[in-house]
Image 1 (spheres, rainbow, N blue to C red):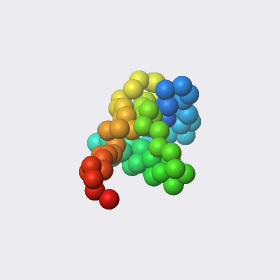
Image 2: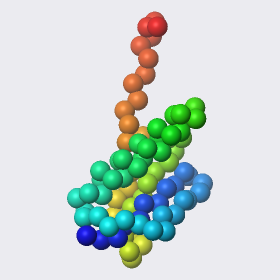
Image 3: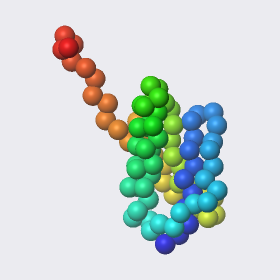
Length: 84
């Protein structure tokens, strides 16, 4: 287990995770996906989803060990033309 930091980027600013969390390498993708979807869900409740965001997971040395772009966290199903 290692302490990993989940930093949120929106293309302009970065929200740093100063606390981190202890995870095994195999847990990182699932945790990043859960975090991204929680942010997307909260944004949907407020009527605006920003898919420019990503989560970069850094190790204690500051190296990126995993990255997840928000468009990769969800599947967007467009409406069918003519369907109501």
